[in-house]
Amino acid sequence: MPTLRIALAQVNSTVGDIAGNAASVRRWSRSAADAGAQLVAFPEMMLTGYPIEDLVFRQSLVTASRNALYQLAVDLAADGLGDLAVVVGYVDHEGAPGRKRRDASALLLGGEVVATYFKHHLPNYGVFDENRYFEPGNALTVVRFGGVDVALTVCEDLWQAGGPFTAARKAGVGMVLNINASPYELNKDDVRLPLVKRRAAEAGATVAYVNMVGAQDELVFDGDSMIVTAGGELLTRAGQFTEELLVQDLSLPAADSVPNQAPVEQPADDGMSITSVTAAVDARPGRSDKADGGIADRIADEEEIWSALVLGLRDYVNKNGFRSVILGLSGGIDSAVVATIALDALGPDRVFGVSMPSGYSSAHSRDDAAELAKRAGLDYRVEPIQPMVDAFLANLSLSGLAVENLQARVRGVILMALSNQEGHLVLTTGNKSELAVGYSTLYGDSVGGFNPLKDVPKTMVYRLARWRGSPIPSNSITKPPSAELRPDQKDSDSLPEYDVLDPILAGYVDHDMGRDDLIAAGNDEALVDRVLRMVDLAEYKRRQSAPGTKISGKAFGRDRRLPITNRFREGV
Image (tube, rainbow, N blue to C red; front, side, top):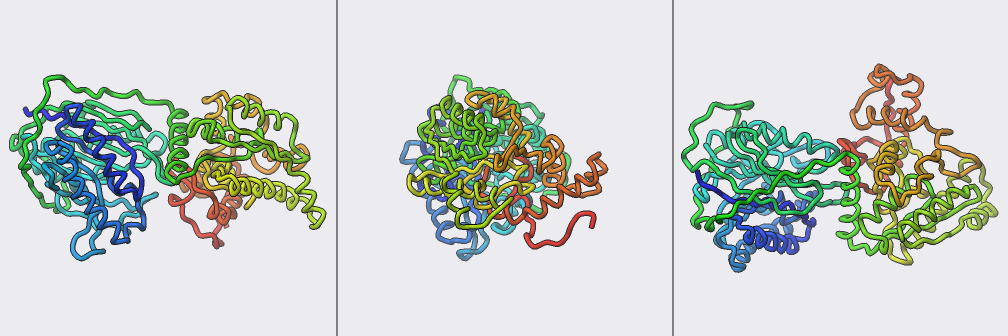
């Protein structure tokens, strides 16, 4: 059986930075060659970054993507890597410019684009709108390279049965290469491995799965690349949230040696034709040493989520060119966790905290904010808000909730003013539970350019704080949560306890359960009605909220699109 040394480049790309992404392909290809690889694969839409959303409608971008692909093939040969097969994702089109845009994969070898493949299955759920952007391909590309038939596929082709993997079985390939930009959500790694095993069985071939790592706006990509044999054996698996090169020797069936096999799971190949290409350049000579990428350990839920939040913030800040971040430090749990995420993402020199005490701020909250800043080593200042609040009240007749919200809005003004003056990105600190029920002040504590906790329920915020530990003060974890906008205020004055609230929100928001289903699950009827009404009425606030890292199956934003003007109510 022929042996191929394959490298999976689990790397980070930036949307729109075509030149920078091409340079990254060249650097990692050199590393792959130095490791003895004969073929290296990069993630989906590596050259353009992913997702590019409506940028795909700009013909100039599609043209730039195509031009960069052909130039990359030439540049790789000039780098002395002409005998290294490089598979890379990009955006293409067929026919007249602007028509039949394609999510594409290409194999580069010998200074040329040897083969291309157009993604067949286009996802149109959750955060995906690919039917809006692309036309599906209807031909499976099989490249004969190094004595092995290799089928090219892209991301969703693996997530749906039938089509390319069934066609690959009929073609008798030795390996299916699947390049991905598969966004993270909690425990998705537990789904991937069984899925790759199923597709390996469906194709009757080894499957090499490479996934992107990094973040783009609200999405995080966790890597978790792997190789699985036709028999379901996991040969190697990369870590999560790590940029790395996974190198593995594969013994694969020789071309034309795979017998005809009966269909498995899904007999339909969707009428896909087979485009066969034979590489004119021989694979670079193999090496006598053995390459085994190993199998990375899985990580616990808290570490997984924390890693996603850190990476999401780091890439948002760095890719958008911000020098630093600033946030309000109240001494409470949410701001403490956000500050610590920022600390891990950016380092203390790039994190600025502001304590903004009012007449209702407790001494222990002020102390907890100062203690966190001291432990973390971040820049810290105190800006009392009471004189500013009093100035407003001297000119406006306000009472009750209006005075509470005024305090929050004064704090928002301070943070935005410091952002303008000093160039920081403001981080807002509201968690998913608060966003769900509207427990925030519009243009007050909700101001900011990014929210690391947007998709993190309050109960999970506490779990993360306990897991992370220092520099988060223990008192921030143990004391009852409070906005401290009136005397002796607690969150529980306005909301159910979070361990009661969060399961209802998870059912209603994440899983689309209705009122009757939530009551049948054992929740109090009056409480369900109250919570659902709060969620429905807060849609206008959420529509104006900052972007934040997605960690769940359904985050606020592109995952959940509801009208603001809406009179439908559950149970009415």
